[in-house]
Structures are given as structure tokens and as C-alpha cells.
Amino acid sequence: MKKQVLSMQSKKERTGAWQIILISGFLFYMFIPILSTYIFSIATRWDRTIMPEGYTLEFYGKTIEASYFFSSLRNSIILSISTIFVSLLLIVPTTYWVQVRLPKAKPILDILMILPFGIPTVVLALALVQVYNPTPLGHSPFLLIGAVFIYSMPFMYRPISNALNAIDAQTLTEAGQSLGATTAQVLLKVIIPNIFTGIISGSLLVFATVFAEFTLTKLILGARFKTFPLLLVEYTRINGNIAAAFSVISFTIAWLVSILILWVGSKSQGDSAEAMRPR
Amino acid sequence: MSYLELKNVFKSFANNVVVKDFTLDVEKGSLVSFLGPSGCGKTTTLRMIAGFETPDSGIIRLDNGDITQVTPNKRDIGMVFQAYALFPNMTVRQNVAFGLKMKNTPKKELDERVDEVLEMVRLSETARRFPHQLSGGQQQRIALARALAVRPRVLLLDEPLSALDAEVRVALRGEIRRIQSELAITTVYVTHDQEEALSISDKVVVMEGGIIQQVGTPEEIYRSPQTRFVATFIGTANQFFGKVSGKKDVQTTEHCLVIEDLDGFTKGQDVVVLVRPEYIQVFTQQPERSGCNVIPGIVETITFHGAVTRLGVNANNQRIVADINVNETEPVALNQKIWLLFAANACKVMAVGE
Image (cartoon, rainbow over all chains, first blue to last red; front, side, top):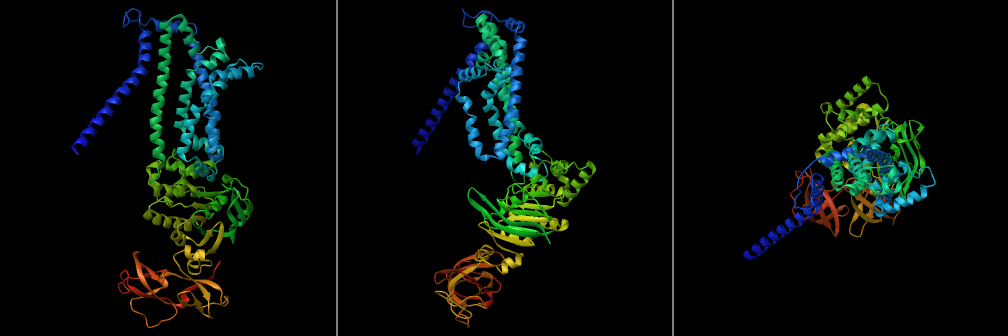
């Protein structure tokens, strides 16, 4: 009996040790490159010593002075926000309609929403360019919005689909209709307010994805529409430190967005689960 | 006078016919229950009245107008759902006001009507709360108030009490009946709970397999079931299968039964005799009267039901249940031999196959 307890104890300790090793390995792997980028963006010289020889903020100054800094930041934001709008306009009503009126089509929609993960962005971009090149859409930002919309579709679909599942959209719709509301009124006044947190999460995920998008932008529009990631890549060839500063700015924006998502997520989970719990 | 009328309504889902040739007249101001086991088509019929399903054929009329193809939001029919379906993003007041807002009701009238229905369901004090801050029973009362606020022509209730505790269920069904009578609103109530249906309805529609088995007042349904399904689904009935053997006699393999009236049955016909447990008397000594309608047996189970105690009796390998009133009968023990006796007029005879 005593032996058994002892062996169990040592087993427990072993798992504990493994957990610590695994987690620290993971954290090390995740954070070292990010930390290095942060340090590199404020290092004066860092090629002869283990730690930088000195620290400076001048590279951040240079990012702001870069001729395309604000225009590329603006372009990235325009691209992200336009994509969010297109996604909301197309995905919210479609998902709702399928959920309420065509539940049988839901598995098809689910598969359709995984497809973008399976298509390499290079293939998507080249195919779109080939098809649309002869048309005025060929090299317009609108084609890019369409392309990044497809690419980011799953990020909008998932949270919205989950939110709709959580509220029993079908019964709420019927309740609204029996009270004299049209389907559009039900969608606007009942469904959207109740899946709002899902919409926010989806929008932020799309924002983060599109803000960092490089391949599609480069292949479809190239230099004609310079976004923040394009500028960053350009600077990796000019000055490593400034590129690092660009990366840090990009990370910071992405992280701020992520924190926002987490906050909204935790809030929404509590709210919708609480609101729908039958008592 | 018929107010809500369903005529030869059929509905099937993927080759599975769920409602067959449903014809029913509902009088204005009455409360009609659809009662039956799950899958009997009661909810589908209700949803066709609401407009959420369209019949494959047949007509639904309301106040002499054909509403078969009218969209749900134009029918003026209120509905209360099993899952309450209150809008979680709105307060109680906003929920109740929703239908009135959709109809562009002037603010003053809207406020008055909301106050009125909240008072009717005795929940005025919850107006500012959100649905999740209320108990299940309160939520369902708000759902009822919300449906009533728009003064619908018909009120539909789809198993409104199924998600609630037994105590709340009994209290709330009384409330529903009170409000329904006060407003004299034509109401269709779907339930699988026979006690609920019998206690609050003017008329009960018993359904099975998409077909109406019987329509009648609760008493008619209980006392004069027209089919074997109704007799066994509503309350409990002991069944004795046998053949008509004389003017007033039915012979089963084990027992002989005397029936008050066997008109319409021919000698030798296969019949089933139904006897409710409360019509059976229990004797611990062999009664003086013997022969027909006296069945000896051994007590196998004793179940206490409060007002009565139900005995499960083995009579020559046939199980018979009998209800006894503890005050009026001598104490009975398990495995005791007893005699069951019932009057000729307690027997209900049906041809087998009905």
C-alpha cells in the first residue's frame, strides 16, 4: 500500500517536471524571436556582443519619417475595415439564413468555410489575377478586398455561427415573427444584438488577419497599393533595425487587437451563456 | 360558431406523413388542447396554425378568412414557446412592448397596454429586469404577457409548462386558464401531459399518428373514450381481450365478464373490455357474489399515490391494476390473495382493431 502511494507520488512529480519543461520550451520558442525583435529595434549595435552595445529610439523616429509610413498604415486600415464590412454584409445574413431556414445546408457551409485554409494564397492570388486581368477589376483594390475576404472568411464565420448556435436563433425568429416582425426586422432588432459579441470577435479576427496580409496584396496589386506589411518587407532590405521597429509597431497593433478580442470574448461568453440558461 | 377552422389538413416531411386529414372547428373564446404522445403531429398542427409550416393540402380559416398562405407576421396570432424565447438583449418591458412597436402603436397606448398585461401576469415589478434575472416560471409568464400585449386573434401555447418544476407547472396552468377566461381569447394549447389537458381545456383533441382520435370535453374523453388508444392514453385502463359469448357476456380465456350493454356486437366477435382501476373494488375475503366480474389474484405491487393506493395484481398471469382508498379497504399486503370485483356498467367494450 505504502509503496503504491510512493510510486504514485513520484509519478505525479514526474508529470509536473515534464509539464514545466514542455511549457518553458514552448514559451522560449514563442517569445525569444519577439523579444529579440523588440531589443533589436532599440539597439544601436548588436553584432559583436551578447547584449546590444547601446540603446536608442532613433529607429522609431525613422519609421515615422519613412515616406510611406502613414499612407501604408492608412491603406492597411482601409483594407482591413473594408474587408470587415464586406464580411459582415455577406456572412451574417447568410449564416443566419442557413441556421434558420436551411439547416440542412449547414454542413455544406461549414466545409465551404474551411476551404480557404486549404487553398495556398499564392494559388488564389495568381488565379484571381489571371481571371480578372482583362477586366477593369484586374489591378484594383476592390479585387484585393474580394481576395482577402475569401481568405479571411472562416475567421468571421466561426464566431458568428457559434453565437447563433448559442441563442436558439430559430425560436427567437419565430417569436419575433409571431409578434408581427418581418424577417429583416427580426434580424436587425433581435438576432444581431444577441450575436453582437460574435460579430465583434469575428471583426477583430478579420482585422488582425487582413492587417498582416502580405502575399495576396503583393501578387495582386504590388507597389500600386502599399500596405504596412509590404513596407515592412521593403525595409528588411534597407535597414534591419528600422524593419524591426516596423515589426514592433505591427505586433503592438495586433496585440492590442488580440487583447480586445480576449476581453470581448470573455465578456460575451459570460453574457450569452447566462442569458440563455433556462431556469 | 366556428372561429378557427382547419379543414382536411395534411402535412408530411420527407415522405413521412405527420398530420393526416385534420379537420377541427375551434369556437371563439374557447381553450382547446391538442393532446398526444410525442410525434403525434400536435406541434406540427400548431405550427401550421401559426404559419411556421405550410400544409401540403387543406385549408386553415380564421374568422372566415383563409390564412393558409398568410405569413406568420400577418396572422395576428400570438404564440408562447416551450423555451420561453424571450429576447435576451431586451428588458421585460422591452420584450412585452416589442409586438406593439412592430405595429407602430402610439407611445401612450403602448405604455398602457404593457402595464396592463404585466399586471395581468402579476409581474409589474420585474419590468426593468432582463429575462435571465427571472425564474423559469416568471419568464414564461412574461412570454405570455408579450404574446397577449398585441391582442392577438388566437393564442397558441406550445408545451408552455414542460420546462418547469411540477409545482410551478400546476400554479401556472391555473394562471393561464384564468387569463384566458378573463380575456375570452381563443386558445390552442399543445401538451403531452393528460392531467394538464384535462384540467384546463374546454375541449381536448386526442391525437395519435397524425390522426385525431377523439374530440370532446375532458369528461367525455375520460368517461367515454371512443378508441382503445384514448382509453389507455388518458388515465389507466385494464384490458381484457375475449369474444362475445352471450347477450351481455364476454368470455376471455381466464374470466367471464358481464357487460351492461353489448348492442352492436355480434356473438363470437373479438372484443376488448376496458375497466378503469378506480371502478374496481378489492376484497380480502371471497365475496358472496361469485362468477362473472369477480377475479381472484395475488397482490404483486403496492404503490402509494397519496389519495389512493394502486395495487398491481396477478390474476392468472394477467396483470390488473386496481385503486383502493386506504380508509375504506382492509389493509392489503404483498403476495396476499384478494378478489377484484367490478360492476357491469364499469365495463367499456370495443371491437378489437379499433
